[in-house]
Length: 389
Image (cartoon, rainbow, N blue to C red; front, side, top):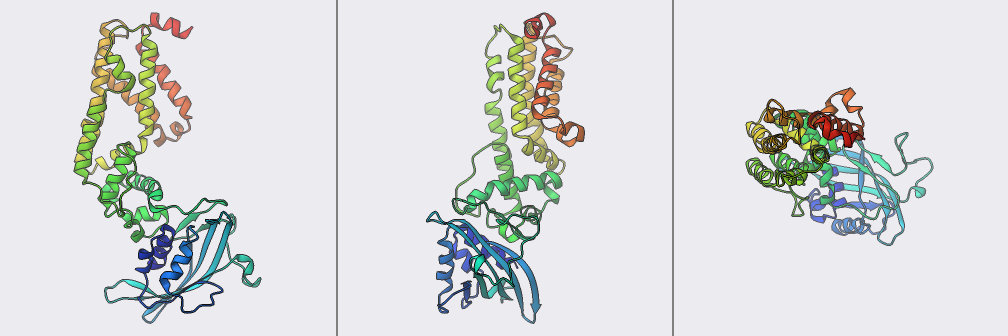
């Protein structure tokens, strides 16, 4: 079963070597329904399919174990636009025989995909498609692919990394680092566990990758796969250094750099909206870190000392300086007020999604409400007259 999936992934990625690794050295492969040359080599057969530059999807129909081998009946689909700009639509219902190897792995001993244009199939044996799905949507219990007419070409493995990272973030947020498994991420994507290891070499590596890119620390890597990200401790240190280097940022940094302000309400509003936007953009990463921080002390330190503390310190300085100048209301404690501001923004930008009523608040309404409330709470009434007019 796994070998069949890995061949499909390798063909979709254009990786001949990875596809061949799933076959026994003398295994035959018949990719086409009308194949005249029985002696075609497996490498040439795979290359002929890859020349279409389109993904290969596989849906396993039946698995029949026998003495010393397993027979797998599977349907395969190739659909999209070929290199010549012409539409391609091939489907095949074939059989694959896999058997155990001395190293305890399973390899393909014989393979037949029987790909052909659907119109060439006998009417008595139509291609079965799950009810309610479009002609170019094939969903398998073990592999999910979506095709649209006019697809410009197959996606390579690096183009699928955002999907992998998004799935990892969902799983780590739901289960936490300790409880989450690579197999959970694979299930979220509809792939086998072995397929995930073609992208990243370990669970820690996947977690680090999710943190780095969900926190917007760097663009997606373009190196060789599987990726081997730096250890978690290194990423935590880089995240702390990065936040320390950019906080205060944007409007908050500009406000701290000047003393004279003509419109404190507009200044505060700009700071609040910018912070709300940042909280929104990093919501998934922050939720994932918060969930796993219950199990990993170093993540709790990153969350509290590395991420929140610098922002709170900058907000405290800003509120204190503007209150001293009479531009904002003087509160009992500037640090406590800074925390109130940040926690309120955080709830409306992120935590409202954990509450069914909060999640129903539209993003624009959430931002407008929290900003308006905080501005009216902190700006003296006499300085709000112009704003309200």
